[in-house]
Image 1 (tube, helix red, strand yellow):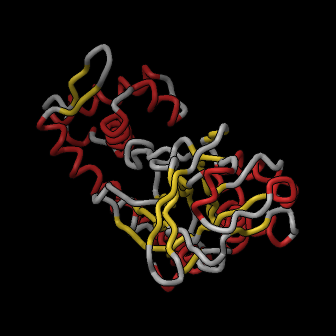
Image 2 (cartoon, helix red, strand yellow):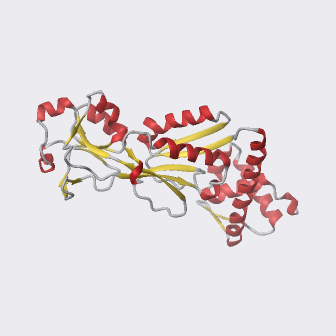
Image 3 (cartoon, rainbow, N blue to C red):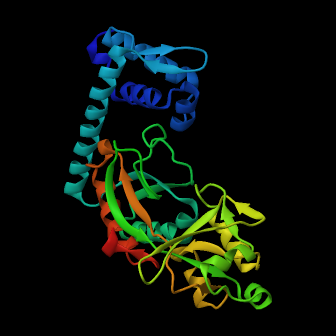
Length: 308
């Protein structure tokens, strides 16, 4: 083989195997047989003339030459896709598929509807929406952009702040009728708390009073859940009191099914950010969705753009 055998198809296969570390996973992702993935890699290595990947029974890793070739390949594939975008843009609408990851409950209740509106404006753009509360590796999973609540640790991604998500303490009227309303944060120990098992520090609550003073109180209860929609259902069922994002319960408060508590005190807001894989940021369809979400998310209940 010679250098003319370095095809974009083989290069794409190599890039995804390098990112995922698994031939079988890439075969499933691309909808081809694992033998085809293996052949693409073998043919690419023969054309390049050096081994690009090191294979063991458990893992596929890049050689030093493979790491350098991967970095160049990512840039080449990005330029090819951008060139296609520009050519299609000369004829009209952007097209292709965007892979989006989003916090589960926020995605179900709000982002999914924003995606519907986006696709109504851009009917040629497909969206693959993945909902998870786990901090997935965006590059490894082939994600273009992600909406994330909470502090971030991955500094390799481009970041757009969407604002701060306000929280409040709520409970069902029936539960409060039976137990009474708490008059101060210190009284919460006498109530059942609904806690999030996947949120660090959920065994205490920090309040800020009108005087700016902070007060930390223990927060316990018999029910712990790892999904915001489960907490929402538990609240409506009268299982106790919980801190909740405004966007999670705003409709239930409006309907009178939940009641805000201790409104003289505030809970810390949580940052809401949009992460963008740098190599995907220049692609037209990705830019369109990023701009759409930045403009639309601020209109959702409890998202404070002034503090973003």
